[in-house]
Image 1 (cartoon, rainbow, N blue to C red):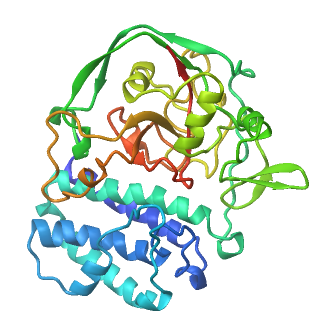
Image 2 (tube, rainbow, N blue to C red):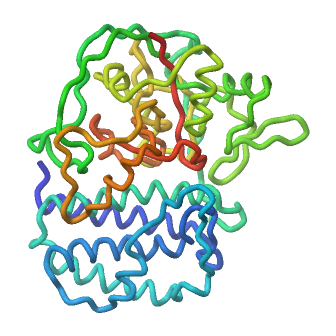
Length: 389
């Protein structure tokens, strides 16, 4: 269990992480909107501090607001239905200097009262900020290269296992899958509760995530190319965070849920359910490509664990789509201080993802954590593996 001092230190570290990300955008580009369905980038600079202020300063401690118009302006992100894009203009947003003054005062006032803040709310502030470190990475990924400040990238990792048999499936026996968590196990978001078990019939699951090379066969058979691919002069390239590279055939393919589902169907397979993922990941080997270690994916067989014979990279190197529609668990109760975190998305239009991506903080590698997105959303670092009954 983390102490109050540990949590205060973790909040500082999370702030440093998001500050570093924002500095990768050239100052004249902060009012751009790289993803049409999302806010302009300046929103996220104000949103993280406004969220902390609204949660801690206003909700918990009832402090007097010093700039209520910013508290409202930067309060909420957006997830518009398809075809309903935001129409605001750069001039609708305040100057960056004003946002920075608001942010600094917010941090100063919150830091003065951190000892009075319940641990649960500190966890919420930290994890919310780290979620946005990943969200902002998606947005930054789609910003034109010339509008970003380039950084030195880690070299391609040395492979720790031989070339894989990508057709290999692992038999998973029938048994119980434990979903969710209990309050005694520590912090979790409202949709992670309550812990319960479900029976899962026997199935087999692909040992590796589906690769770009495998998906290329599907494209050559007539499917559309994924969002992160570009073709020039008959050659395919991957649009990385800071540069294009020849398509890395041994890395996981990043696709939408609909594309993953179509590929699995083409292969005569299906996507795993959330309980099947849990059955396969009961002893989760990680890829090492999480917690901001790399900007882009690494090969599907570049594992930290050399001798593991089960499903590889269940955590890291790309979130994994499931066939499970995002819904509440039995006994669900929304957080009273953040009632719109999960419940508005129990609409039958979002699917559960499990695991982690290269830009997922380590705290989210707990097995109970659930991510979710619309099935046609192309921007996230999401891949998949297949199952057969």
